[in-house]
Image (cartoon, rainbow, N blue to C red; front, side, top):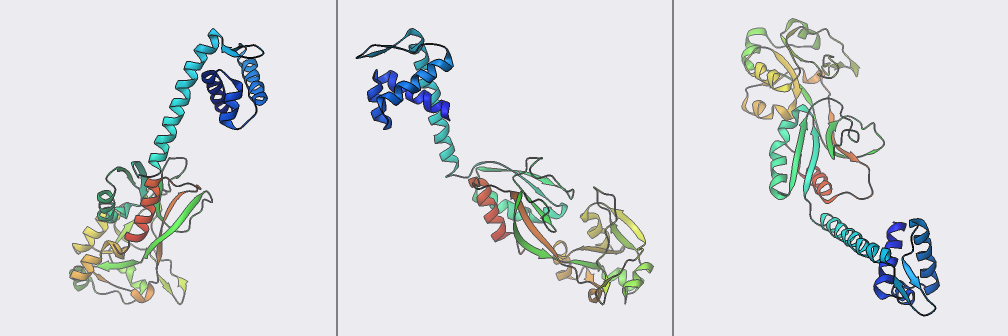
Amino acid sequence: MENLGSLDLFVRAGEARSFTAAGQQLGISASAVSKAIARLEERLGVRLFHRSTRTISLTSEGALFLERCRRILCEVELAEAELLQTQSAPHGKLRISLPSLGTLFMPKLAAFQRCYPAVALDIDCSDRLVEVIEEGFDAVIRTGEPGDSRLMARTLGAYRRVIVGAPSYFQRAGLPQQAEDLVNHACLLYRYPTTGKMDAWPLSRNGQFLSLDLPGSMVTNSLDPQICFAEQGLGIACVPDIAVRRQLDEGRLVTVLDDYNQDCTTFRILWPSSKHLSPKLRVFVDFIAQNLFPL
């Protein structure tokens, strides 16, 4: 920026053919202009002005440099104008990451797109723990407590994992009356794709977590097969309630062991900490915070 200031001062002096006039435009003395030009000449290793006691004139090198500096300063002005425009109208690509059940969010994201058609969403759906800053995400929606101090966070809502099965399954296999009864049922299990670990069902008694070795009639690393198999009466699944509300309302699935399940998981939106949010990110964070829940 200091170099740009020197170029601006040079252009003003070159166009006015006067250090005094250039100084008056900038609110500094003619002596300060002369010294700044001298430092610029020393840095460039070339004389830009012929000087006499009463006048200045551009050297041939100075005249060439003046034209180039005019173009440079013009480009800077255009860049500033474009930046000011981006600060007033949300547009451009917005790279976001959602958990695998983020497909449930799509109607809300479609509503955002209708409100801000100039913002192009680049959506990544994955349960892996993404590196927000290193991977270039503008925002991510995730569960759990944020662990990166470089990120800002805003709470969106919460959901429960519920243990569900089809009425036809329970008619055939019986209702589990206590958590330990699950070892005699067909369990539809979830394996985390990043770690390979099995998801532990949120079962507890008197505040103590119950660790059970559940028999898996199916193992998957995505939500949809669990819900499908449960609806088809092939076993019991532990899934987010927001993913099966319609099935529960219609009676195609029912919950069991609610007294053993006190699960609650919080959704948050995270984005890189910055004093100046871009308009596209600001409207996205506000829209999602206001509209994502209830799903």
